[in-house]
Length: 384
Image (cartoon, rainbow, N blue to C red; front, side, top):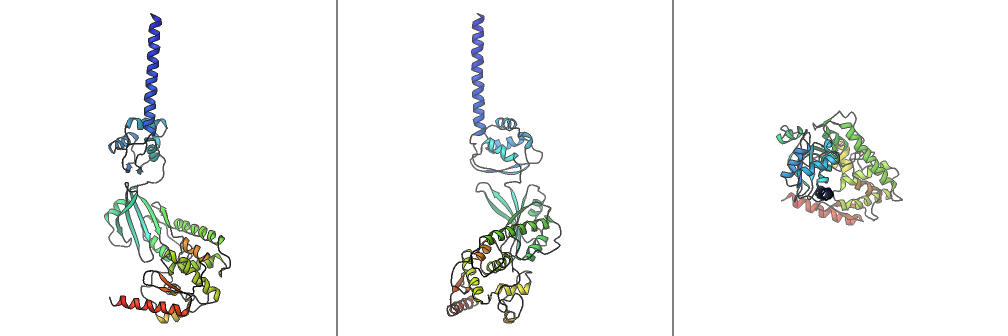
């Protein structure tokens, strides 16, 4: 009899063990397997929240199938105390394990509101953007001039939200004065820029910042990046160039940057200036003349006068030989690379063609025909 009881107890124990192992295996597959989320969501984790609240939110959003398994899994991985506040993009089909990693790994928010300050050649703009989880693309909701008298309420609300991301987006071709002036206009940066950075030595790019970032620290980042880009481009330069130093390459790149906004033209524009330098021809480029008038402090806002084209200044390339003494703007990587690796052509001239690009020419006769065509286009536009 006792043997029968013991045998039955052992059998029950084995069955229970097998059942427990099955449950654990099922829970494990639920935790690590693809989740039920049909479309990506932006998960907001409030400061002071816990995994219980997060699991409730995820269950309500249809992102997890079992809140208990989610919490037990986080506890088993010893991540319960590592929960971070913020807004996090949870992709379609994310497993519980992946979601736990997303909300505990740290770093800035990956979705929600983003404040982007765009520093442009003609104007500056602060944009508020919201990430659409379904497309993983930002949609602009508010835009305004940071120097405007009235600041949108949406921006004031965003500034009070510690979960918002901030970026400074610097366009190619802006001057150092424009960058400093723009940075001084925003309220989420601190510090006074004591000295204007050298022209050309700020890398156009998008820089993520935090509220309270020192302006001088940001400018130092821009300078460091531009120095790296210039050094790399110079090390990989073509042979036989009519420029002798990285500084001269930067000057030439800035002229290329200001002469064309068409990416495909940079190599050709670079070849024109390279050919002119080789032949001892004056560069005769309007952007350098304009810089000599404005000192890089904003745009001229009008056409050049004949008296300005004849006036002798260090930047008037209709008068001086070779390159001006400094860059005339902050060129991007593509223009720097074009300056040191221009296309191989026999082009010597170019003029606007009415489409946003340029008509290139090898001879003065051909160039004069292109100029006449451009004058015709200008006249037609003036009469419209």
